[in-house]
Length: 411
Ligand SMILES: [Zn+2]
Image 1 (cartoon, rainbow, N blue to C red):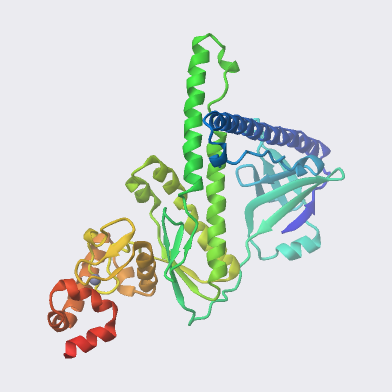
Image 2: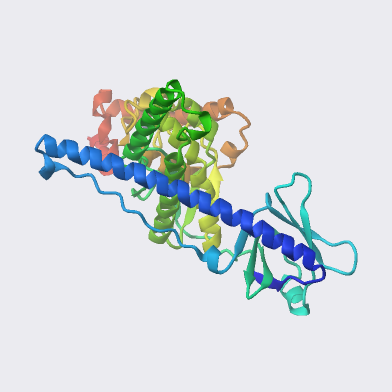
C-alpha cells in the first residue's frame, strides 16, 4: 500500500472529485437511514412481542433481546474517503510520458468517467517496481488535498513444511467447516436461521400493508418500501460468521496442510431442499474462497481435491453407495460396517485424496466411481479370508479394532 498525492495539474478535475464525493456521502447517508429504519421496525416488533408476553403473563420466560441502535461511524465526514473496486475506479498505465497513471473514476453520467492524472514520486516508483497493482483503490481527502492509495498483491512465502500433517476440511450447512481432526466451526442453524425466518415474516407483513394502502389510494411514491435491508444484513452476517469460523480453524491448526473440496455450489443449491438451505447454500461458495485467502495470508499450504463421492465413499473399504448414508448425519458402510459422523468421515476422505494421482487423472464422475469400486474389489479380495473367518456380516463392526480382529481370525 502506498499513498500518492494527487497533483493539481487540472484543478477542475479535483473539484469534480469533490462533487463526486458528495454523491458517495449521500449514498452512505441513505444506507444509514435505511439501517435506522430497519432498527425502528425491529424495535416495534420487539415491543409488540413483549406486550403480548406481558398480556399472557409470561414475561419471566420472555427471552428475546431488545434491539439496540449502534450509531454508524462517520469517518467519511471527517476525512472524505472513496474506497473503490474496479467497478468505480480503474487505474490505467499512462501512455504518454507526462504522467504515470490515469485514474478513471465512474460518475453518475453514464459513459462520462472522470479521468485524473497521477504522477509518482521516485520512492513510489521504487515501492511499486515489479509489483502488480490490484483492483482495490482508495481516494481520500486530507486538509484539502486528495490522496490516492494503491495496493498490490504480495506473495507470502509458504511456511508449511513438506512433512506437515494433512488436515481434511469438509464444507457444509450444518457446520460451515468440519475437520478430519474432529472439530466443527460455525453453523447456518440456530440464531441465523431464526433471524432469516423473522425477516421473511416481516417482508410478508410489509407487502400486505402496502397492498392495503394501495387499495386506499395512497400514491405509489408514498408507500413504504418492501425492499429487504435485513436480508442484506443477514447476508453480511453470514459472511462475517464464515470468516470467523475460518480464522478459528486456522488458529487451531497451525503448521498443517489443509485439504478441502473443490466445491460445486450450483449443485448444492440444486439439492438443497428447503428455501432456508437454498439461501445458505448460495453463501457456501464464500467458504472455500475465504479458506484459500486466509491460508495464503499465513503462508499456509491449502489444496483442493476432487470432491466426487467424498460423502459416500467408505474410507476403509472404498465401497461407494448412497446407502452408506442412512441419515444426513451418519455414515455407515453397508459392506464393512465402518461407522462415523458423516462430515468428519468426508473430511478424512478428502485428506486422503491429496496426492492421489489416479483420482486426479479421472475426467468424469463416472470414472471416479469406477476407480473407487476397483479399489473396493481389491480390498475385498485381500480381506475375503478374514471376512469369512469373522462370521456373519453383522459382526463386521469389530473392524474398528484391528487388534481384536487379528486375535479372532487366529482363533
Ligand atoms: Zn466399508
